[in-house]
Image 1 (cartoon, rainbow, N blue to C red):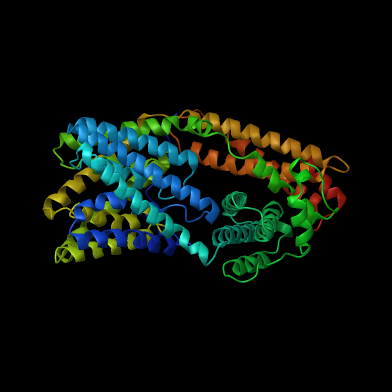
Image 2: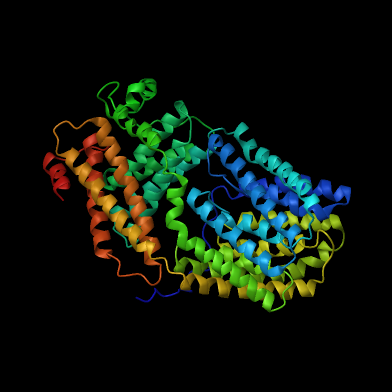
Length: 573
């Protein structure tokens, strides 16, 4: 079958800025400024490419709790250094541009697959590919490689410190924000459900994703009273998601506001016995699935948290398997874009490689959106470069300061829309090429425009050419998972006294399966060359599962119960 339409309306629309837009913006400035200013003082700005590799790692993991962030940032630094090492060794062994473009394309595909499989979050693979692709075309000898890698590691260590430093002031900031976001989205869903607007299903999907993200965030936090209190609030958001008619949006929003500061954590009604629940969670027999503590719902509702932790994530190679088509798209698109750039005589084909690598999203339709955003943002960014370059050429210090300002602007704006952030990223990338020596601005502008158009066009053609048949298969698996999870929960609801642990685990499993189904369905619906998707089956499965979730919530006592007949009717549906 043919693919969906490629939209233009709304592609450039600005969204609300991220709640923490200033954190990556300030972090990248704090991570980049000291190494660059030190190199400036030493007269060695030509080495800034290598320190930038480590410094830009400060862009990652800002939504993760600090205990998890420490490991994620360390892995990003090591991954960046490993990619840089491959690029520098390749650059030292050959100057054949075709070979270097091929290496860059393979690196880009590996980085894309690993970032998607690990769900590293923004800026994902783009920054990694930018550094490694650019490094492939920097003159290099094998003897210089260890020193350049040491610079990257040193700057990466500083970026790690910058990323972890806010934890000294707000050690639970990320998980508080994630919980507040879930509560806010749940409140919005409750309001939409009551008004029955056309945006209701979208609000429900957003709320489900927000609750799921908050739960996953808390899974990476070590057990303490704060985590337990936040888990109770996430349970309240889950309850509002499952039973919006019984939820109090004003109270959910009030809890969210209280979480955004540094004050005491709000305690929902009926959940004040924190010490008893905390002791129960720490008991070893809960990990084995046995009941500990009294018969109150505030004990029961936390039972699933430890089960979720014990389940963990599937192995990395299992998560990489479904990403084969995306990796092939990236490798093919980046390689062809680089070859086309070389054929046109462009001196920096890595710009075309990076442009192609930045396009690939969950499906062809989203890739098209990113292609439009990339082209518009880069062309506007070229104009910004033309306006800024006279100022940057006043002095080498001005060049560094303008780049720092653009770093801040890119991270401050990119959450509004990708194209807006690209308006700052493009002149910054052009100015970085002048750290070693000033360049012909007219030639830089021409080559960047050509590489942007070539990379976007060739990259998108590769996305269309490489079909992702697995998207339909994954949707079928997700549907089966939801239907199975719904049947398990419904069976438990028919029992007179279901085990609290089993009921809570069934509820959590069904909620997670629903999030995965919606994500998978959205991805498959925007993919080309698919067989007909079971859209009616998806809608039916979602409606039935949400009704079962609501019945489960009421059975657990997380919302005021309706009459017995209504509860039984929910199960039969």
